[in-house]
Image 1 (cartoon, rainbow, N blue to C red):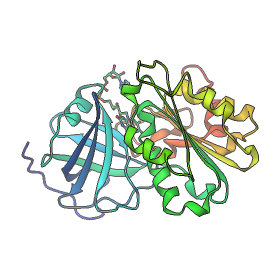
Image 2 (image 1 turned 45 degrees about the vertical axis):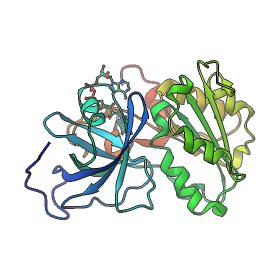
Image 3 (image 1 turned 90 degrees about the vertical axis):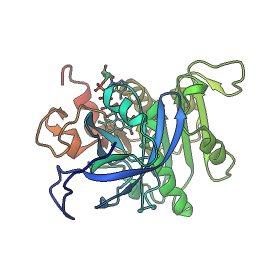
Amino acid sequence: MSVELQHAPVGGPPMVPSRHRVVAVTRELADTVTFELEPIDRALDPPEPGQFNMVYAFGQGEVPISVSGDPARGDTVVHTVRSVGATTQALCALGPGEVVGLRGPYGRGWDVERARGRDVVVIGGGIGFAPLRPIIYRILEDRQAYGRVNVLVGARSPETLLYRAELEEWRSRSDLSVEVTVDRAGPDWRGDVGVVTALITRATIDPAGTVAFLCGPEIMMRFAANTLTGRGVSPGDIEVSLERNMKCAVAQCGHCQLGPIFVCREGPVGTWERLQPLLAVRGL
Ligand SMILES: Cc1cc2nc3c(=O)[nH]c(=O)nc-3n(C[C@H](O)[C@H](O)[C@H](O)COP(=O)(O)OP(=O)(O)OC[C@H]3O[C@@H](n4cnc5c(N)ncnc54)[C@H](O)[C@@H]3O)c2cc1C
């Protein structure tokens, strides 16, 4: 699609998208695609792990999508998108050379800094592993600054396991522990079957010295956080990323409001200590 937009000046209004061209497309799964995007007129600020951009499929709609690439690679922006509705379907149909609008990065991401000198547990479920991937890149850039790193991943089936080749590569490293489980195995699956909480139960964790980062379906994060606190990890040391309906992404429209917070601005990442009481209120 050819798009003629008047682009925003550098440092321009936050609601104006900056045109980006698709330079690479990787089909991850039947319904999931990773894009690498380069700026046409104006580069966005570098994202922190866990932040998101509003991605505009011209003529279709705009949706929040987390950054899934290496934060140290500032020249391009990487997003992994699962097709669930009209806009994400349009995004997943884009090919190299096509153009989308990006604005961001928005929100509060993972506090990877505070994990320095401590053990890290990264727990992802389904597409929720995409916003967690930048944490692993960030840690690997300065691996000796962190203690034991456990990566625990759950998927519905082997066919829906995101970044499978990269997980294999990480699994072969001696300085990462990578465990994967699926709800339903096929005949070729040799790994674990069951929920991700089972992986937490058997992981080697020093509760007082651990920071945990969780992203996936809310029910999965609730069970995972409860299992971690049951093992002695403090709720203040567990960070979760919330998914809410977001339209403006700058705390104006109120679509993403969760009690006293706007998830687009105060989140999407917050500690379990802060968010669990809000999630426990029916109807919020
Ligand atoms: C902060 C944040 C970060 C996000 N990061 C990513 C990301 O990295 N990758 C990604 O693929 N998605 C991500 N999402 C989810 C993404 O924004 C939605 O999938 C998208 O808004 C759906 O828009 P749509 O127009 O395609 O579908 P809609 O027309 O809005 O929805 C179509 C149908 O799909 C359902 N639906 C909507 N969202 C989801 C969902 N996430 N899972 C399952 N069903 C859904 C709706 O209830 C509806 O029934 C993120 C959301 C937030 C809030």
